[in-house]
Image 1: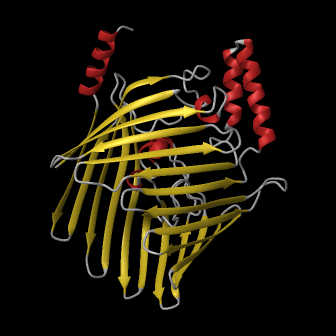
Image 2 (image 1 turned 90 degrees about the horizontal axis):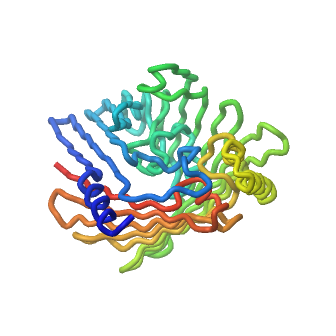
Image 3 (image 1 turned 45 degrees about the horizontal axis):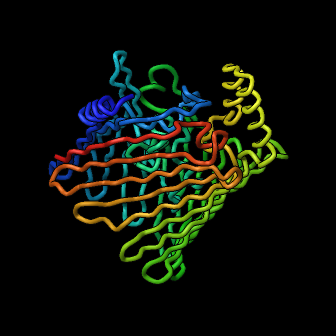
Length: 397
């Protein structure tokens, strides 16, 4: 492709690039907020061994339109809340996928709170992976890249009770089994398993400790802590034990991290362990299967080998990961960040710098770049695009 064609493609992509509109309107005690967003790729290069992105990873709302709408009414003792989000494709065969994120009736009496309906309980203090969040729907396939944005997170239907005392916070919830099918599953709500959930947290000096116990088809138990170190640092950790379906299956998830805030730099570093992921030997064996299929030039065999890397649709394949996020303190005009995720078993990873400019009253432009490193048979290059540049523009009303 010559330079003139490169320039034409770039200008056309900018003009068709993403737009995000958000608004919040108040009517007395009723608040309404809505957002509309789209992110478009300026240029992307497919993985040589996975040109069709067979597992449909990292799609997020790239090339589509994402929307959310929320209504919140609060009275002294009563709260009504509805939040909805979805994804619409903008091609010649448009498709809409929708989820009700929250839909609840809340009652309050002093330190006692009762919620009936669908709600989100986000307990984790981790940024990268959040194993202790038992009450966030596991299926976030609409927005895999954007699971950290709670606008696009789905809660669960439940009856929840919470009590705040001098001894700490106590919470209990019953989550019934609901199996939606057809259009209801596509437009309304994901299926959920019956679950009992109990939570406790309190402060001990500068440290916060939390416990969570959940029972569904198996026992899940978690513990977490976070505490400040001076004015500029914070440590956090959480561990979750999941009762294994098989005796030889590890059942531990662990997240450990630190946040450091300096005058010119903020940093988050985290380590994540998933005992249910593939160990080094199992991962190497599956990678050898991919190498053999690639050497034979057999697309079907290579596709099957790629699928074997994530047989249960997991976001990550292996057991050991690290995440580093660096950002400059936001200014009125420009902010930059650099996020890196590394598979500590094969030393592959993804480098994701982002530049955001919001020096205008109602406009923000964001340019992001994603580059996987670690060789053609590393997890992050093998299972996604080779590299990608995307532009997002947000307009605020």
